[in-house]
Amino acid sequence: MSAEAPILAADGVSLRFGGVRALTDVSFDVRPGEIFSIIGPNGAGKTSMVNCVSGRYRPTEGRILFAGQDITRTSTSRRAALGIGRTFQNLALFGHMTVLDNIMVGRHHLLRSGFVRGMTYWLGGAQREELAHRREVEEIIDFLEIQHVRKAVAGTLSYGLRKRVELARAVALKPKLILLDEPMAGMNLEEKEDMARFIVDLNEEWGMTVLMIEHDMGVVMDISHRVMVLDFGKRIAAGTPDEVLADEHVKRAYLGEADEVVHDDGEPAAA
Amino acid sequence: MDTTLLFQLVLNGLIVGALYGVVAMSFVLIYKASQVVNFAQGEFLLVGAWVCWWMLTTWQLPFWAGFLVTLAFMTLFGILLQIIVLRPLIGEPVISVIMATVGLSIFFQALMKWMFGVFAQPFPPIFTAERMRVMGLEVQTVYIASLGVSVLIMLGFWWFFTYSKHGLAMRATAFDQQVAQSLGVSVPKVFAMSWAISAVVSTVAGVVVGVVNGVSSALSFYGIKVFPAVILGGLDSIVGAVLGGLIIGVLENLAQYVDAQWLNWGNMYQIAPFYALILILLIKPYGLFGTRNIERV
Image (cartoon, rainbow over the protein chains, first blue to last red):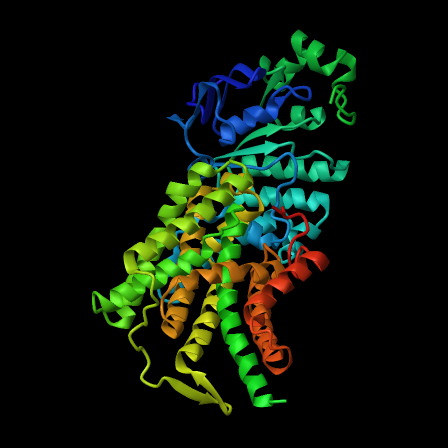
């Protein structure tokens, strides 16, 4: 493995809610350009970990570093501006807004025009700026194949489409690191394949580093460069998909018996 | 029946109703952005009108300058109010926040009386012609101006929420704060901005009413009149607030007409909106455009 500086590093992160230990001393790092997945049984602390990275939760102990900068105390919105985008486990689109407006919210920190320049729309270059933004937004829309619904109200779309719009909104942020919390939950096989392709393209063509939580073992093992396994808030293994699959702890804690695991078509044993 | 009087009253109703609509919009703005029911909305009008009056009389500024200074002051006023009083209350029970705004209302009423006295003070005249005739009806110039200003503000709101970056951020925040944050929207800034805009917009209404009736603590009554309007329109709907304001404005003038012609009770003008309020709560508690799941307190 290369010694390249990690884009994201969690250093001994613990998270407690009263007496409940959601995370205990979890450390990992994500290297630039990789797809890094966190897996584990329900309640293992995967989403808690992602929330610590995105800023929704403050770790009780430990530090989070993004591109070498300590962001443990940085606000969520500031982190987004620094380049951490995310999607949510339960769909979190602005249901009454159009798809386009949803995506434009993702551009918030990139739109420089404030109130005054907006008021002088045709004079101050705000119009030119908006055109440039629209072009980039259209690119994202093309990429995620949601052209046909761009003017539709987000709440009226099908589940799979909404998932894609949510991804588009996160991509619109132009994040260096994108956090995907179960991007394929509740999708059928075809939708899953599409989504897997989008994630790989995001990673390879758009150069985004991906930190993903996903239950579908087939997909995780297929597209991830490295995988970390959490169980009861503790890290029990990490490494390449093959290493993780071979790990005895992982088999016991999560995947069940070895022969149930590796089939691409099957649902994960313990998901 | 006296149809000219009737028309005159409907016109008055629309003009006053547009002002109610403007105040109601700024009330709904705060509610939508930060889920605070602001009982001090009327005091925004009061403080704004007094500050403007003070600029024009004591400092002898021309109207446009005094007005701009007032708007700048009220922007700051709204932001500071949010930061000092309401931000520490984030996460507290709704009822505590409401009590805080009731407290603010009492505080600013008393403060204004202490600073400027208890008597109504007339604004220096702003328009050269006091009245003009519109389609055969006699209307005060300032009322025409106020209608124009109200419509401008409404268009401004529409533009702001549809096309501006901050308007979009505000809509996003109203829908889901966590998600908005994760997209780079600073929620504290959005809250502060909503209070600032609300204070400024209410001030415009306050100055208009002040120019017509003189500045006095009666202005804060608009904060109460706003309730029938927003309940009718729906607590979280800006369009509803405008419509609600217009309807309530016309309603009170018609009530006055009915009162003057037949009932002779003498107080329908003030009371009618609140009868309407009770009726709406009985029949359609979420208003014309309100979301069903909003919280009632």
